[in-house]
Amino acid sequence: YGLYNSSTNVGGRATAGWYDVDKSVGFTPIRPTSVTLAGTGTQSAATNALGMVEFLNCSTVIVNGVFSSKYTNYKILISNVLGTVSAGANLYFRLAAGGTQESNGVYYWVGAYQQNNNASGNLGGAPGTEATIGYSGSYSWGLSTVDVCNPFISGYHTSFYANGMGTVGSGTIIRSESSGDCVSNAQFDGFAIFVGGGLTRGKIQVLGWNE
Image (tube, rainbow, N blue to C red; front, side):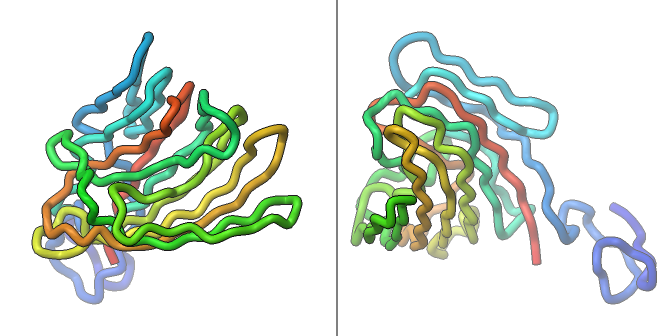
C-alpha cells in the first residue's frame, strides 16, 4: 500500500489517501504461475523476472495464472512466432481455467486481413471453438497483440480484440485484426495459443491494467 498526495501522485488518484498499489493505473507486467506446452519432440519454455515467456517446439502454449482480480483488462503481446506448418495457417486463441482450455463453441468473432499484393478477405466464427488472432507459416509471424477485458470476472462475457502483422509463404506480408466475445460466464485465469502443425518458437508477455 502507498499514500499518494493528490497533487503529485503518479497513480492518477483524485484525492490523497491509502490505495492498494496493485490497483494503480498503467500497464504492469505479470509473471505466469506456470506454462504448459503440448506437442511432440523436445519442448521448452522459460519465464524471466518480468513474466516474458519464451517457448520452443510445441503445438500449443497455455499460459496459466495471469488473470486475477487485480486487473480488469489485459494486453497480451505475442512476438517472434515461427510456425512449422504451410504458409497461411491460422494462429488461434482460447481462454483457459486451471490449465484447461475452453474449447466449447462459445467464441463469437469477426475479422479481416490484408496482404501486400492487395488481396484481402473476411474471417469469422459464430460460434467457434477458438478465435483466430493471426497467421503463422514458414516465416516469422512478427508481432500480434490481444486486448482482453473481464476474463476473471465470473458471470460476464470476456471481450477480446487482436491486431498483428507478419510474413508467411515466400515473404508475403499480411496484416489482420479480429474482435469478439467468449460467451461463457466462467472465470478464466489464463489462455492458450496454438497452430495446427506446431510452433517452432515464440515469445509471450502479459500486461495488466485498470482504468
